[in-house]
Image (cartoon, one colour):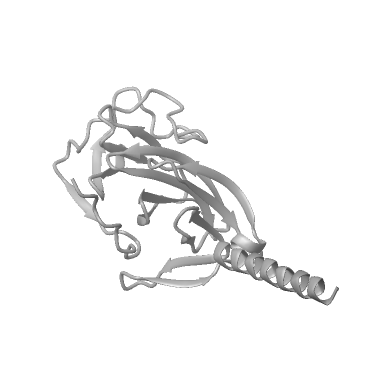
Length: 231
């Protein structure tokens, strides 16, 4: 009998240790440290928070938009334990997901204090994440994928011009372009919930007509990219 009890006790301890290890592993988070590296920490949003929506990346893995018990929003890559904070968001939703070039571009619509419409543009490839914050606090942008799927236009109304962000080749470019015929920059809303035009579609030619294109730096230094595949 004593042998049976010892075996059961040992088995129970191993089981509990395995469960604890699983919880700790699931609850791990890797976040950027601002110097090109990452920090390991406890992922309270995973353990105690609320998953809001998921999206699929080009490589077949998933990302999840979550809200932690303190009301903070973040995105976690399920296969890499990589967490991308949405630091200033008081609401958040995934508005658009597109495969552009070698990356999956996810546009998250957020609300910040005194700013009704703010957008996080995130470009994922493996564990590498590029991130920019855009928006004029007043309008939803019209987002159009180029026919060759190598660039993505993000257009905001700007009086008699369009303020255009162009994601292409791991960069986000700023441009000012003429308003296409039939497009009303005063339309309310300028775009619907999916960031699609509520009126005539906007041409999606990469580049701009003004000759002025300025690269915008990512909001934070990304983690080191995964090693390239041999080929």
